[in-house]
Image (cartoon, rainbow, N blue to C red):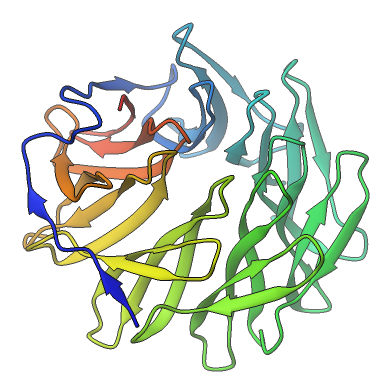
Length: 324
């Protein structure tokens, strides 16, 4: 049976009475898109320059510094994940339009890689042990992969994934989550255990499910479209139980991640189509939030300590860091 959170909007969560939002942009950015945050408050993402080309960045929140980078030959760099050492994973496109994976070491060296026998390699996640998960196209079909720190790789597919298998996260135990596409073009969630066992899932009444995060407790967070054609947030525990959530009065609700206290973070749209962030405390208290002067606030990642990152729109799109 599906469980549903019933919440009341409160002025602040019990987790933190006064969370603070800090805007930031790399130098030369015309739009900033944070994609990941680690437990040491390092934020990875990308930004676009005045020519519309995307470049990678890594922000050290403790030192208030931003390093920018690109793999050699990149025509567009997209970091997707950062682990606790500051190692960044992602993908980039070259001048021929081909996509390659990359790793950026804590020392700042950028190492491209491809999966043998495949094309369009996309590294989407990295865990604290340096294992990378992502997708690669082999013989016209997208497969999931896991790459070890020594460079060895295996690929896998979800049964009945006619449209492809797309990992988006990997936890410290090597458990991979993501989504796959069925023959009807609809998406469904999956969790692959380290022993190769794959469990597929959807919340009740869902016809399309897309996970966004797996944390080191094996909790998967994401969003799904229900039979009502509305987007809802979900949280799937390691035991397979699923809880769903909607911000009261919202048109759509998205889940971005959970922290060590079981608090849920994400974004929702109002009746005018504008995005706002939210923090749902495990007690049921709900705190909507927006970055300063924002017309849209989008939460893209949360770390285990409940620190969030994302982007917001004023005259241009900026990045932000939010305390718990």
